[in-house]
Every structure is written in structure tokens, then in C-alpha cells.
Image 1 (tube, rainbow over the protein chains, first blue to last red):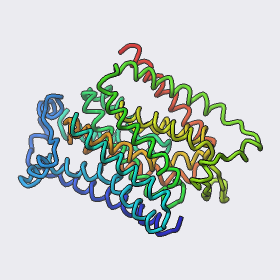
Image 2 (cartoon, rainbow over the protein chains, first blue to last red):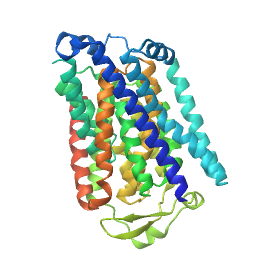
Image 3 (cartoon, chains in turn orange, red):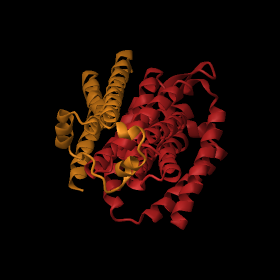
Image 4 (cartoon, rainbow over the protein chains, first blue to last red):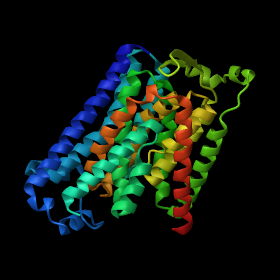
Length: 126
Length: 279
């Protein structure tokens, strides 16, 4: 494979990872600024860690939380960027194989992308 | 423990898990889950949710470096991802049906087998190396990489592509079921069945793991099993560790790496079996 392909994929992965880590770290700092008791209070941990605690679990909920300036929602948004990074890599691979006129691998990669979309649809149903 | 101390502790554990994970082609989840549940008494469901994120972090963090060093074989990865992602969906479905203890035992047995097989090493003759099937030929899987330890360009020809694809489907299913990257299954499948060099297997496994885990992560997110207070320090710690690990891989000797991998497999297998039998 040519050098630019490796460079494009490496850049995409690195950008996704750095972007997500920046968002997650910002969310973490904002959380501790909003809740100074988290630095010293022991019972606070139990509330954050119990299985019954509700965490943002829809994209709409995360966006609403980010608009409110919620540190927890910003952290979750960063985690979602991290989850989306490998999916974006597959999408980019389709384009690359298409440009290279490699029909076999363009088809294989498109199939992987379709399977991923099906997986996300299945996830919503459970 | 205060939330601040908790976050710092989880971050430190994840740093170590990310380093070892990227060296061995494991997602890091196999280290993160026991550490969170046994040492910090985190609920297992939340530990799995954080683990799946760490799996993506390890893969993406290390993959950028592997792609640049031409260690990961992208054709092999794309071809095999058809198996891992389909398996991921199957696993997500099965997760609600099968008893988890059965899975732990099954996984422990597969890992034990992998460890023994890798310890013996592959015994291949010259004739065997020449037998390249029609799939491996049509798929143009042949490639090469520069080995820093050996100081030379190594050309390799993957074989048994169909068996590799079938094994990847199983690895993907396990990943979906247990919320792990299942690199421990992917590496032996490529190393033993497809006869890829160990460094290429490890790098390609790391490259594929992120896509497999992304499918599972969507399910865990929708189920509300991703606690940002656990997943955030895990993601950051693992990323930093994976970055350090990926910059070590090209320079360490294949033999010592193989032995390290076998020891880790045995330890994880024992832990899995114990959990499955005792509950």
C-alpha cells in the first residue's frame, strides 16, 4: 500500500483519540470544579458507583447535558467520540479502496460498515 | 475512598493495563475488569462498560503507530473484520441467553489451548509453506514489514484465510458476550492458523479490536452501563499506556514476547476457569 493511505488512517485514528481525550479531560475538570466535595467526601463515591445510578445513555441526553455544562455529560460525549473513531476508520477505508479502484476490498469494507450499522441498530433494541 | 482518589487509582491501573495490552495484542480489558472488581469492588456490569471503552482506546492509540510502521496488515484486517463484527452481533444476542458461568469456562478452555499451542510453537515444513490456497491468493494477503530486532525486511504469505475468518467470527462472538477485545483469541488465530509473523499478528489484532469493540460499546452505552466516572479515567490511562507500549513493540525480541504472551494467557485462563467453576 502507498504511504498516503497509511498516513491518512493513522491521522484519523490519532485525531479521534486526541479529540476524545481532550473532551474527556475537560469534562473531568469541570465535574470536580462543580463538585468540590468530590475531593474530600467519601460517601459521594458510593453515589457515583452504585449500579442503580442513571448515566446519560442516549445521544439526545448527552447533547442536552453538554448544553447545560454538565461535566458528566461532557465526559460521556468524549467517550462517544472515542467509540466513533474506529467506525470512522472503516468509512475512510471504503473511500481509500474506491480511489485505489480496488473493487474487492471496497466491497469487503462496505460490508463491514453495513454490519457495524446493523450492530448499532441491534444495540438500540436491547 | 474519595472520588478524586478513586479516579487517580483507576487511572494508574489503566495506565499499566494499556501498556501490557498493546504489547500483547490484548485490549487491556482482561486486566482492567479483574482490577476494578477485585481491588476496587466496582460492580461487574459497570467494569465491563468501562472495559469496552478501554478496548477501543488501546486499539486506536496503538494502531496509529502500527499502521505507520507497516506492522499491521490492512488487507488481512479488513477481510477478518467481516468475521469479528458479525460475531460481535451474534455475541450481543447470545449474551441474554447463555449462562455467564458457561462462558467463563469456555473462554478459560480456549485460552488454555491457545497458551499450550503457542508454547509448542508452529511446526511447519517447507512444503507446507508453499501451499497457498485460492482465497489467500485472490485476497492478495502477502506483505512484508521491517523487523527492528532482526534488522531486516521480512516477507510473509498468510495461508488458510477461510479458517482465519471462521476463527475471527468466534473471537468476535466472545468479544460481544464478555465485553472484551478478545485479542487473546485473535493473535493465536493469525499466528497459528494463518501463519502470520507474531509482530504482524499482534499489530493487526490491535487494529481490528477497535472495530469489534465499537459494535459492543454501542450496546453497553444504550443499556446505561457506561459510567463516565469509571470509563473516563480508564480511557485516559489506557491511552497513555498503549502509546508507551506501541513504541516498545518494534524493538523487543519476538521470542521473549511469545513467552510473555504465554504466561499472560495461562494467568487469564486460570482466572476465567476459577470464576466459572466457583461462580
